[in-house]
Image 1 (cartoon, rainbow, N blue to C red):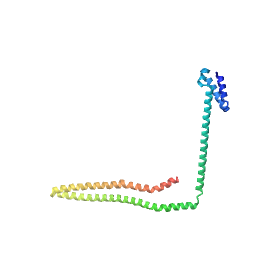
Image 2 (cartoon, one colour):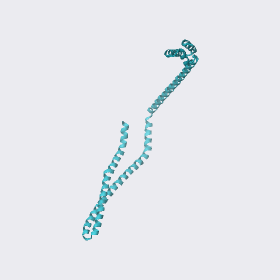
Image 3 (spheres, helix red, strand yellow):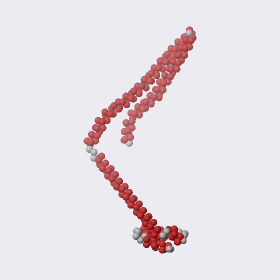
Image 4 (cartoon, rainbow, N blue to C red):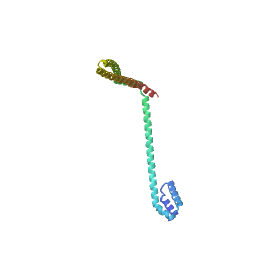
Length: 225
């Protein structure tokens, strides 16, 4: 069997398929023969019999039809989903636009009626917590300042008395001087604590309170933007 006989036999076996598909298949195998550097007999052995080639062509066409049908179903389902989504958005927008003014007023009144009994205690609790923290910090500052003053006054007294006692009772003078120096150290420590609390903790608390007070206004700005 030569090339002409092979192609003629293949054409007769594909006579029942679409003319364009048959022409495309025959042109493909004719070009295959022309482009191959092998002998016609070797090419025919490589391809197989015309019946085998026709069978493989029919399988490829069947697979192509299945893929095309599946793609068509997917496109139709996608178009259906898009139309349903558009209809839903349209109905939703119509429903929201069709809300009566009295219904809006009732919703606002209900929110206020339910929110005030809950919001007021929460605000009062938050205010009480902040006030308690501020009171504790102010108490610490006041206590540290009083301790610094008290320790300083006691240290000065002890040092003055120790100088006098060094002349009359040296041992008692040395002990009082040591106590006076210890009290002076406690005075400096209390003063340092007072300064740290005033310089670090108080500004941080003030910044936190200012930030909390600005939160509602930040929310309004974001909503307006």
